[in-house]
Image (cartoon, rainbow, N blue to C red):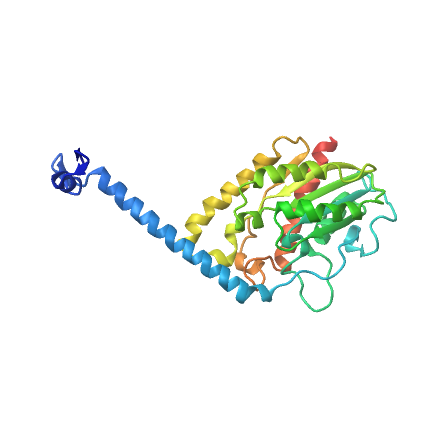
Length: 312
């Protein structure tokens, strides 16, 4: 609409919303289409925000109690053919085709194993142990592992609380090669930590100096498919959440692009013939035991491939 002495004229306003005839066809002015799209987008965003708030309340009151972290050992040794031990990983070095390997995990509830505790009996942290077992098969030797998982932790908390605990675990380490897996980002997105990229970069840098005795040969940061969780499959929430999660993963890639020995591990595609819901636990947010096993197998394959390429 045109302005006349700071006031919209009624004629200009009517012309804006009046269909026009172009080449014999009746069509609306672009401003009407843009206004309609903006209105629809705003309504959809408002509905999505309301859905997110409802889901958060549902999670806190119902679903959170349906899955819990693993209560068993957070360190151990894995050998070929599924032989495992939960004794201290700092004792008993063995030789594999690439030398003794110490696999360290630092992360949030995905490392503490929420959703992977199948019974009341204490279970070792699922993801670290499964990745170590798969990696031991591929390296044809022993892989010692240790993990620090803090449920609900963002990158800032992992740096303040998790990193010192991980340093304590590797203080007496005698491994010549150390591989670190950092699982983070989901809680930073939940809390909308806009300093996420910088804090993640600082944490990755600190992981290179865990111990003066053992060299950190590689740091791996797995990509996450947060928008695929069954609990979040609501429209229009998914429409807005999918690009936001992709943006968050891009921030993760930008955070590590200054390091030559840090790699992003791609999140695998679901197995053929298996529904995504079958890979999640009862809380509809964290993996089930089968989900952790599937993810661990793909993660170990990616880690082994990267270690092999670096050894060439």
